[in-house]
Image (tube, rainbow, N blue to C red; front, side):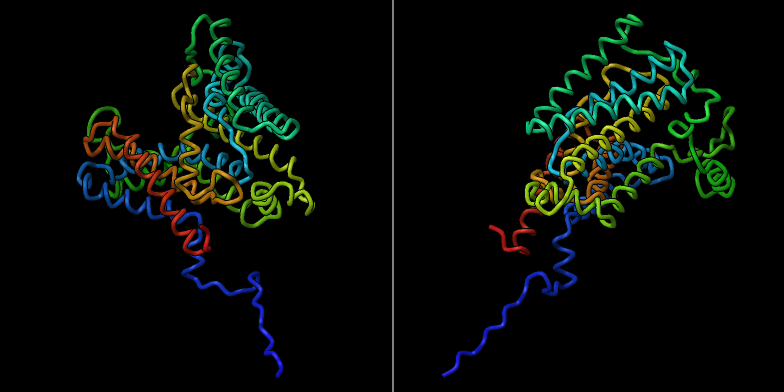
Length: 372
């Protein structure tokens, strides 16, 4: 009697249904969380002005702040590393703009380029120390957090005898590069919308006839650009595959020829770049730099990324998911204000959303993949 040959199905070529493919996407928790948050505030604050032109611009701008730093944090976490110095980097970069541009009267375009160079050098140093020593990035960047925050307080006190330096907006007047961080686009479109009655306009004072929203801040433009760049890099390029490989199993990736050290250092540099974009946009908007800027931003970025479905262990995540996590941040923070809810409850809402998103992502992934 002949044994019937058994057909072995190769998992690598096994067909996956569209539903199953959708369920294992890292963005799932972020999508569900975003829908839940919008439904919640539509029911609670629909008539508060939260969803008119001014309200939408309000929470969109706040969300964009989180998105900029979340993109960098997302790519770095997928590569298997953390950067706890992001918040201090924001404060430090803003102070460098003030010191060079106001105190030392360096042209603002050169000030911005110098600031980016210094901060990205710190990012490269973080990455170099991590890959050369094998120390956990948590420890290395925790040290950088204190170093940068110390410099952010020490330098202005030594130079200006104060920890808040103003005059940035005046120093940036007429500069060709500053508008890329502190300007607005689409003013003509919004003026037309105001004239057509699509959005509200001011009805008194010297701003009568001007639309309540007069353009899209460059902060939002930067957020969208970085999300698009990060998503394409991660999903459409060989370097994106290297990022996943470096975070999934660094040793196996090295055996496969992936330049793991270069990938990790590059991601630290990119995280510093994103933090500096945030900082420069912030000081251009406020016109001043303060030594306390950026506090806790590193944790907010990591939370946004985790809400968006990334794993703390690396090798899994999505830029779109991180952007949705950041959107949840902004909508909840501003939505509580519009709904007249005590603002101190913001972190309570955030903690609940974080916990639910992580549980949902973990539970669905286990069901689909059969993990225990």
